[in-house]
Image (cartoon, rainbow, N blue to C red):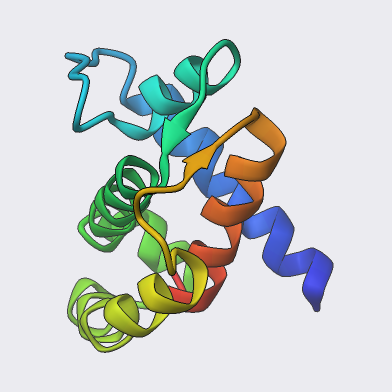
Length: 119
């Protein structure tokens, strides 16, 4: 079951990565794909990572085709995200000023946030 969830998260990440190729980068508000590129060479603050993770989750909840594959719908997804976003942010990103160094650590936190919110 755990591996199935990981496969779904990775497939979703790939889907969004391939469909969101045109990105306008910003220093404080990075899109998910830009964040991944950024993490390969630089570190990032936890607050930026949380903001990007939440935006990715919101994009996931607005993609009805992806949700249909998962057996969900936008309303249920957004309701779940709104219910759990604060709890998950507090658990996974307790200190927003901390600097996350490295792709692996950041990816682990992004995956934990995705699993926690269910998106």
